[in-house]
Length: 117
Image (cartoon, rainbow, N blue to C red; front, side):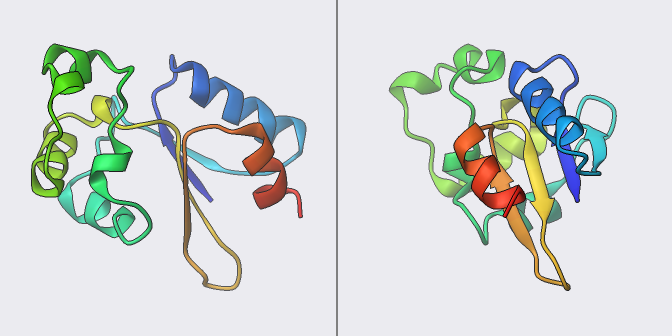
């Protein structure tokens, strides 16, 4: 399992604590040091549209004035590729027996049902 995020992000801290407290191992990829590119983001879009991956609470999102704009899927992909800081965090890649799954953001109820069952 891989967790993509930024160390200072509150949601990432909650996800890390959840996994640590439940003895679930993961590999952490710090997006500030190792940004993901277009191929990875396109892979994630098989689970959710790029527009849903945009974090309205991020500085990048606010600086670009996206609150009043609705970026297209193509524009959202471009924004994420240029600045991973605009992503909702954390992004979790997981699955068993070769099955590939994806979870974005932190929701304790969702984590309980996804990772503890």
